Image (cartoon, rainbow, N blue to C red; front, side):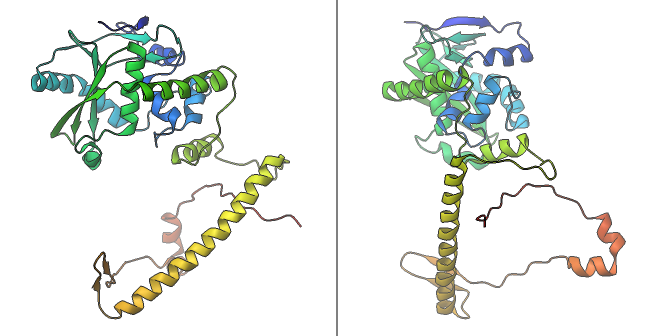
Length: 316
């Protein structure tokens, strides 16, 4: 049984700008994890803004993405050598036969099987994420998305880690996971993208970076009246601040009690833990003295950092 997906558009002679435009026509495999909340580099709100054309499609690490693309052929060839399986390119944007918003631009298909291959490169620092049977959740969802679009029975993933360790794994089709993923994607596409209703912001670094990029500076002396929901958010923040204050005090208490137990010893042991209380030196610049005695040098090496901290207090 072959791949069931239909072809939305051939990519043989497609340039990068045109490819990015076609990505707006639906949800691709690399979008799946972001929409489901499993991509720390991109949040659902960023994917939404890309799909409606408010921001350009972005790559969190363009250098890594560049080398991942360069090494794709190498990874695919090594996969063939190690597994004995043959792979072929499918130069097309594939589309789910029933859900036109589900798209896939796959790396390779396995010849003679109803399976595909995703090629990856990864940093040495991410080696632990690939230990044993482990596969990063973002890539697991990407593979399941491709299986949903194509009707494939399984999807392989091959990764070159740190430039010197090659790993490949088979991802079996998971109908329950695919059904849940499709529900999430369908809701995102129909309730947010098509209706032009942005999804709720989450607490990820990706959302924070997005907000900071969208609203980098404030208009001087400008004011606005906030809605009732803002009161709820501010009350919740106030409660969290009180809880944080209590946690910080408790943390200091426990740290001080442990320091007292260690005294002048730099290391201590329990049957569960090893704790250290060592001398540590850190060299810093006395900025006040530098400014007073060498103001010209202070000015030369000073820089202004612009930020917009959110602060609040109860109105009197």
